[in-house]
Length: 464
Image 1: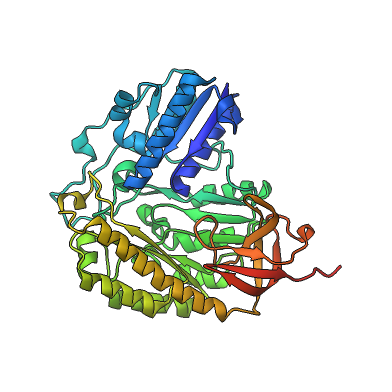
Image 2: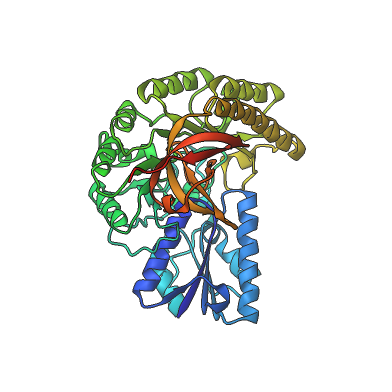
């Protein structure tokens, strides 16, 4: 059968989708990018915040209409929304033939064939965080144990020259705003040898940039009581032929250690790029969020990162409007951003999610105030970026070519080592010869200008 696939949400969810596509193809099914031509449609959903849930429901409804009017005979919903609301989805959208949660990835072929045997449905009480042990960093087991490996079939849906690789699944933290541990289970690291084999396979397929992901990538190996597991993994991946860049995403302030930073500084293929979601800078807000640290601790951590990895790019994300956040708390956050001068900042407005510890708090910051604080913080960051971009004019940089700009086939774009795909700014090539700009190649270019967060650069001619 022809399988159409819609994947929403984060790169971690994307990998699950790629694994399901691989399993479907290995079972003899054909993958199609044209939903109108699909006999079975799979919607891989996200349920992290309200906007993500709405996007997922809209996609399901659109595909349900396609099932009514078109060629599709089955509609399968997978991922976090299916894990969280499977019974409600099947009740409200009868066009859905099967719901597979995050631990049921291997059931995709059975679902396509109509022979799926769902796992035992979880009781709601089993999914809610255990508030009887507020000091404990772990959450009750959810029964979700699935973890893919190097031998698991997978179909890449990213551009050919970069790919995500999950080093682990699940999460052991109890951040008050987050539902992910409930949806993904406890943290479980993959084996280093398995990861190296997968990296070698991806490199053999033409992947030049490998992005290591998990809910907390710097926690890798800790659940298995392995010492310095992430730094050992980085050093082994650095030897994989064909890879050019190895990038770490989703680190955590208490688990980013000196050995990891030293590997980043010493391994030529490991990007000097630290993605460290800090969420806030006010000690009071962080405490209510059940997050570690405070402004002083973060200042020391970031100083250590910059001292150990010269030239490092720092990316972070913040949440504004968390219950109880005062104007004074927000000003502390603004001061932190102004003083630190991060390279990349993402800002989310707090989403009041059932099933989280914060849901018991009063969502007392009005939506308009949340939006205003987000816009204020982003305006502050944009001014920082604009000033730093001006200082880069005339610099010679190395740029990974991504290819033509979407909807502008005569224009090309790429990224610096300090720019991750799909989340950071890009480099637009100025006055470039398309023959020099093959996706996945790294070219030398001179920075000639800036456009908002993005840079303009002119590639230097290659000596013949």
